[in-house]
Image (cartoon, rainbow, N blue to C red; front, top):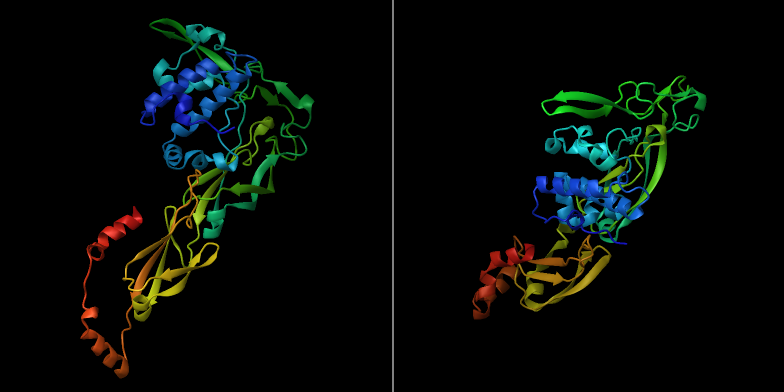
Amino acid sequence: MAKRDYYEVLGVEKSASADEIKKAYRKMAIKYHPDKNPGDKEAEEKFKEAAEAYDVLSNPDKKQRYDQFGHAGVGGAAGGGFNAGGFSMEDIFSQFGDIFGGHFGGFGGFGGFGGGSRGARVQRGSDIRIRVKLSLKEIVHGVEKKVRINKMVQCPECHGKGAASEADIKTCENCHGSGVVTKVVQTMFGQMQSQGVCPNCNGEGKIIAKPCKKCSGTGLVKDSEEISFKIPAGVAQGMQLTVQGKGNAAKNGGINGDLLVLIEEEPDKELQRDGNDLIYSLFVSVPDAILGTTAEVPSVDGKLRIKIEPGTQSGKILRLRGKGVPDINGYGSGDLLVYVQVWIPKSTSAEERAQLEKMRNSSNFSPKPTSDDKNFFDRIKRMFS
């Protein structure tokens, strides 16, 4: 099923401010969080959908790419996206401390889902960023790439637990396995509670008595992996795609990071890209421009034969529709624009000069420009509009 528009998900306009986006997400996160809706799969999906939308729209760079390229610009076309796993109500509230003042326990746990119900923190592995260079043909048709990257993976000896055996994993006595500690703060309004990460276990809720020798208790080791992923047609220089779950592994069987793929375009020898259009400069001789001819022009899929009409003026632009770059959001393809330039020789022979002198005296060779010939800059504007 196609993803919904992120602005629609949060119920805000495209012109919404960062503060409006933040408030809209907070409202939906509180309403649909799994802690408040246990066993409700629909609510869980709506929470994840809202978290994904906020992850993009709250980041200026991601928001700009989304506004320009849609879901594909932020990883949707590469099978990736934001993973809402590991969020607790306290995680949500901590993002909006400027609204609530950072203390939540004193408000009765917000309907029974705050104040001490939080479990140990779910770890998330770090992202890996790579650059992939694409030829113009790969950009036009899309391509599947295979890359081998060095990354952190779960330790094969302890399976990411970091301990020599299950018996060496002890419950943290400071937080009793919750991963958080509660503090009581005296304020002018009375006692208020706040929660923080347990300093003894760093929020994991467990203490390793005897670390695994292979990974030294980290639960992770260095390795390499060959990863395949598809790049959709129409991507552009600087666009970043996300391959979800292919980044570094996390401790204790947590959530893997993502592989972030930054697109780089290799310059084509003959064709120049302008948005979804391709531009080619075709040089023709004076006789061919006067008498007309046929010519071959390059395209991504091979040569195309075009007709040069008799009397073609230098600067004329021939448009081959649909022969450009596909739109990444599926709105058709751009055009191949052939910019005709009449080639004037810098030197001539005596015989050629004699023939040209005869033509000079012919009234047919006296310039008689039309209004379209005069509006050269208008043609240039139309070409790039």
